[in-house]
Length: 289
Ligand SMILES: [Zn+2]
Image (cartoon, rainbow, N blue to C red; front, side, top):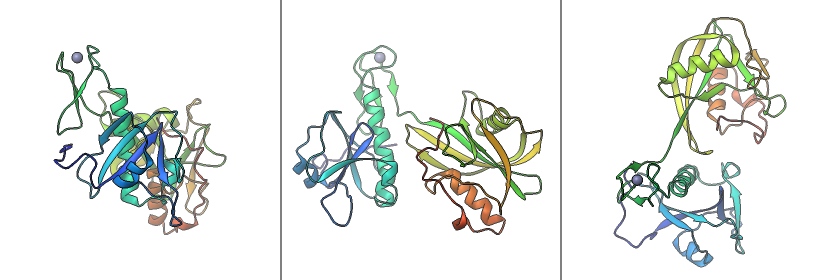
């Protein structure tokens, strides 16, 4: 994950991702909708950053992430917005960069000191890493893997979805949970399913993944097939779980989530149309975090 500090002036030609807490500063002075400041726009805002980092290379645009103090007010022509609400508002690549930017910022501000000896840590040139000048320990940004799985019945005609007590009313989704130390992803899938709904699964196959920056997860998606056992719900985590057919689907997760991509894929495989699924707005949908 090279950072490649540029020889240009810091921030030249860059887009600025400025966060107050986890809310992103957007310019609201255009009828075309919210946009992110470029270098000139950022300079014009005259805000004092607590810390600035480069978001990282490998992206078509250069990005700088700025941490602002909680006391900073949005200047005229600008506003702070939660990231989730900016999906579909910002250009897709900028939205993905914002997800990376907020994680770089969170990592930076939560690793000011060496986690072993407490000495002030220093940034490593050319890497997203911090090194302790006293004991030499190097810390990298933390990414927490979580698994999420779509379970089909033995004949493939139904899908098992569950709802947590914090879900919005009527919403069901795929089962998810964090990977534990020493576990493979597939073992985590089998364990989470067993713990949450009491059944065994087989044919655990990788589907796809999604960074989930709330605060620093990587959701790793799988499909699996029911292989035995009765539904037995883990009371604290699962309020209800049911088998659904393609013609009687419940309210589901919003399009933003990999849960929804998994569900849409299954609906299509059964000859259904995902566009007919009803999604709740999503603000109440709990994620492992
Ligand atoms: Zn140290």
